[in-house]
Length: 230
Image (cartoon, rainbow, N blue to C red; front, top):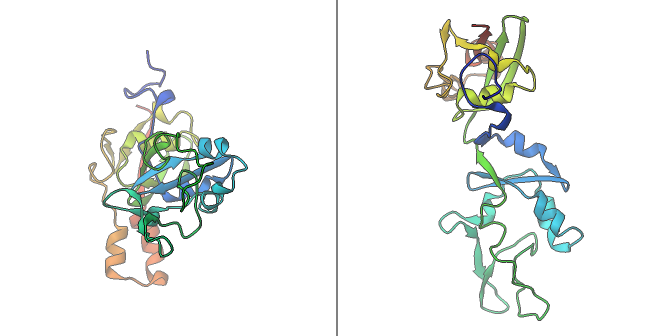
């Protein structure tokens, strides 16, 4: 029987979120904990860094820890961008920061080991999820404890995924009924599918002055999800 409390749903002990925000990726910016994102997906390159620890070819990767590196790639081929080498006249990978792990040398070399199989950027071995294309802030109110928390979430995330984000702040969140405007939320749906519109885009469209709109944003744009025991 799943260990999750009073509300029917997934086993959150083994729950895997599909989306990560850019700010979450940015938190993983050390050699011992290194994530990057590119072409809409998030990758944990920590095992790669550990495997090639001390190798100079890691330098360009270490320099972009926690960042989006989509500009390294051709979006059509999903491969590293290429160019004509002016010295050799041959097509080769374009690496402005310098050659990195699994990029072949510009000229043939006897010490180049190409038996690693699929280059790290082509496989899904390091993939941990998708990058949130759009984020929004919601305010979660625990009516039992009279506590509030503002949380940044991905717009594409289901309520289950949002609940999973909230668990570190309230271990009992899965045993509550989640509501908005007095109505129970469908936990399999996103905020917008539950009728909770993101008003941030409207403020941006109207180009409201920050000084004028800051109070309005806090009051209206931030979603309030109330949790109460069933």
